Image (cartoon, rainbow, N blue to C red; front, top):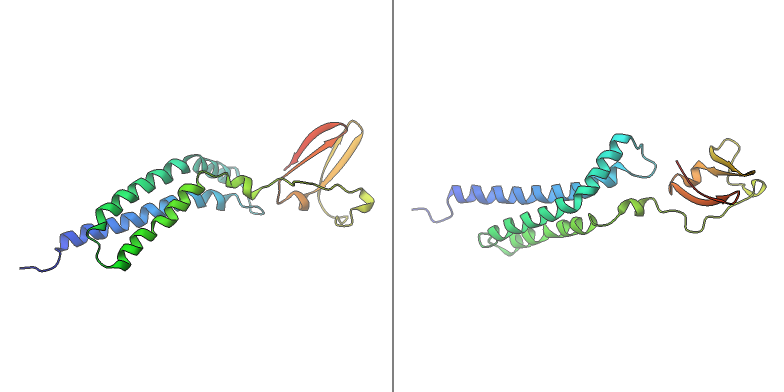
Amino acid sequence: MQSGPSRNVLGRRWIRWVLLLGVTVIALAAVLVPALLIQPFKLQTAERLRISYALHHWSPMITLLALLLALLIAISLWNQTRGWWRRACLVSLFIPLLVATWFARQNHFEWMFKPLPNAGFARVNDAGFVSEGDMVLAVEMNGDAAAYPVGQIAYHHVVQDTIGGIPVLVTY
């Protein structure tokens, strides 16, 4: 007569733990992959943008379903899990799931590419931070011209300005 749980029960429990870990990884990937694909100063291709925006669109649903599935798995494991440290591991898996579920509902693209709140503009003679070989984006409208150093807008990607009385949004 066997005194401990059968191999079949242990196998099912092991499968549920692996499934719980997998669900957690999927939820984290749904949130982290878009942020990793669209980093400032990293090559951004049309394919990366497409993947990133698609995942960003679906990540709230993916993370919510992952959280619900993880909750069902955790409930089924709770009574069969012995030892406080195993239960602590079970509960601790919900921390990254909850963070991913919250983060999926935030616009992290805005966090990564914040527009300059108070952009300062300098005349050509006062722009000592721009060397002669630096690339600039130049705009001329109604006889007024402005140049935006690529190095200055590389992080923010967006500069709002008025040139020749016309509001413009400079980006690249």
